Image 1 (tube, helix red, strand yellow):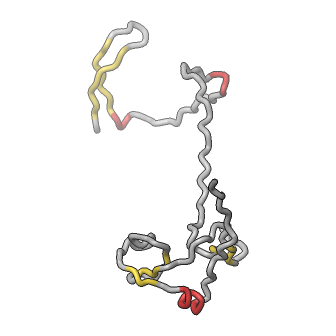
Image 2 (cartoon, one colour):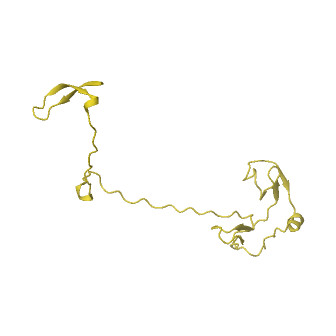
Length: 139
């Protein structure tokens, strides 16, 4: 038989009394939880204004001629509207192309192999049309 000794406050006289319980005699029953509705909840908090949603947009770098569909459902590559600079170097570590980079954007390697236009044409990488993009005329 296990006994627990403790203190409790009597609800009739509001005085603290010593209590001794025998755990073998206690029967546990599940209590019903009261239903809580929005009308019964009181808070002292003021309603907060909704936070603005920040929309992030990925922009394909200007040295990549095309990229796969952003939602991935069509399975095709689409032309990059911002393609202005043909890649002029290839990372010696991972083989990715870049344009005038100091370190590879994919593996952070700093050693590159220079690529000329003939190599790009042999690989099927298009050279951007120099007349496709706009330049403001200076006075």
